[in-house]
Image (cartoon, rainbow, N blue to C red; front, side, top):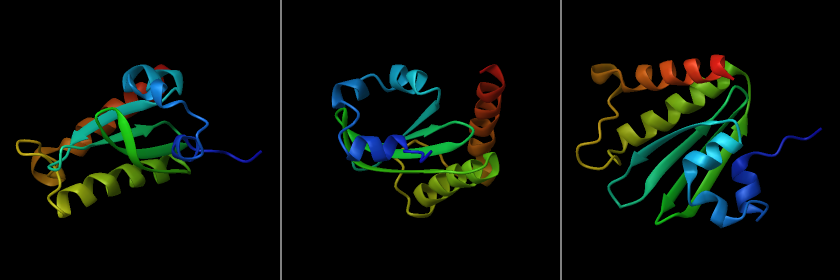
Length: 122
């Protein structure tokens, strides 16, 4: 069985754009955790993750501009999430007042703790 990520299904039109208007509800329907990071350019990075998949959607006004996703072990997913946060932090893409400095503020630790709790509640 070939796995198809949320990002792949969005790009191929298998997910109706109207389903993405309420991302919390959509994430729940996909059995995924959702985190949103506002970016300087008015877009938002929406991170969807569960134990085998991680997707990052760049959205503006309820529309997906870009989408990338992948599968792996729980460690791979955690590393993927860390890479997203580090990418945003290195390039200083977060909106003013949004802190993604992993070491100083423990932002990733809080996110991963929520992720771990979510995965054990399923």
